[in-house]
Amino acid sequence: MNLETSFTSKANSIYVSGSDIYVAGYYYNGTNNIACYWKNGSKTGLSAGNASEANSIYLSGSDIYVAGYYNNGSNNIACYWKNSSKTELSPEIKGIAVSLFVSENIVYVSGAKYEPTTPEACYWVNGVKKDLPCSGLSGAFSIVVSGEDVYIAGNGSNGLTPFACYWKNDVKVDLPCNNNGMANSIFVVRQ
Image 1 (cartoon, rainbow, N blue to C red):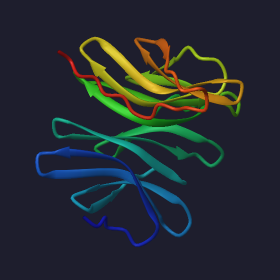
Image 2: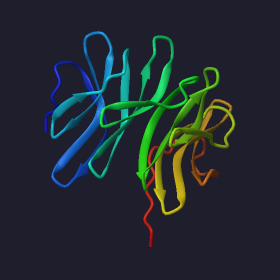
Image 3: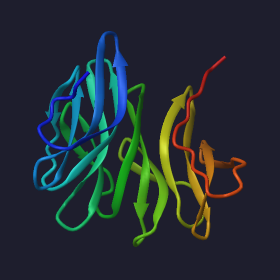
Image 4: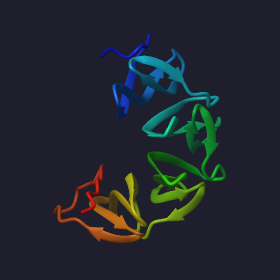
């Protein structure tokens, strides 16, 4: 399937619902990257002002959720769009939203905040930021909810060297990787 765009573009996430294919990403408009999603190849731009990118897409009922960030002129601000309407996440700090999951009308978004320039893993539950326990350079790249449990894949660091880990209900579990690792996705199968 070709994605409708007239400039350079990038697809970051895919979601399939029935016969419909949704893809989140961005396209370059000649000046900035612009967050968007494609449904069956047809592009919908997401308003954000300056540059923006979409990193994840999720459907809940008839609602389309897209996680990403936009630039407010001086900083990147984590946000998500619900049916193309933007919601800022902690607009007082620099940040990015990387993954999104909706469970029982609760919106979970994972990503990173920048304090002041070092990314630190965090997530938001209905817009309320929660810091994940981890020292130094870290990020939260994938989030999924199973029952009452919140799972997040990402990385921590030993100084500047990243290592793969995940969190279950805010408790970090390091994954064996001999340093220089990163966990980009998580999936839970309930039995």
